[in-house]
Image 1 (cartoon, one colour):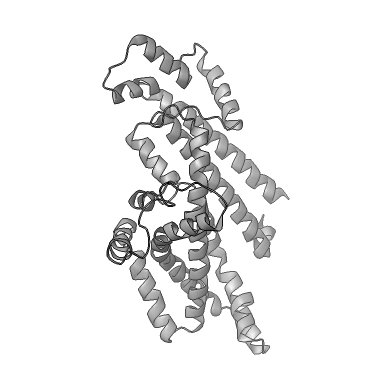
Image 2 (image 1 turned 135 degrees about the vertical axis):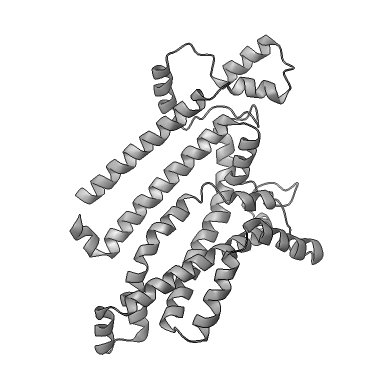
Length: 327
């Protein structure tokens, strides 16, 4: 219990620090969102319109910085992040609600599949080390993991979309379609998400294979694995419950970090495929100097990473009793 309480305290302090930095950093920068909006129209705006923009962005306040800070904390607690500059007058909360499901569906599912596939392949390769599986699969996937996301994505668009015409190479669904829960729309989503998902899977699975293989080889030399073999246990039980269960522990933190950064999306992939996820919106926010949208996405990334690490610590303590004993 004390271990969990310490991790929760760390989570709370880190989250507070991230929110505080998120509040003060834009206010330390020159200018404000209204002036950034003026720059987009090359200054062709009268003073009354500028004051109206300041009211819309909530920066016309005469309150002290401390009062603004606590108002900001209250707004964040209610999920209110202000108005977007690039997508004015759309609210940031609405944009996040629109983009987050697409990123979770594409990058989240792909990350989980890459971890599961990489863990299983690495486990089998280490168990059959020196064989055909160990000699072919890890090197192939490690080479693929060295390829840039955007380059492989462009190759897939050129081959499967432009040349063969098998799959669409842009957007999340057919233009003109209405978002619904029908099987027809689901088929469109799967077709549009196949190429970016395949790109992410091929580039990211190699690292999981290599690390799991190395961890597994180290664990197979432990005494408890030799004892399990001497007791006559089945090879599958030894591989999964004795060697695999312990070899996967070092990867859990890395997997948690990967899940946390799912929220940010694979920026390059979403840009290449014009996929309407958070990574694509983050790119638009940076290029358009959309500080409210950038603030909200950065805070969302921070919360996602902290939650993922917290879950990883809980799983590690659950799978490895030695962790609980040291705490």
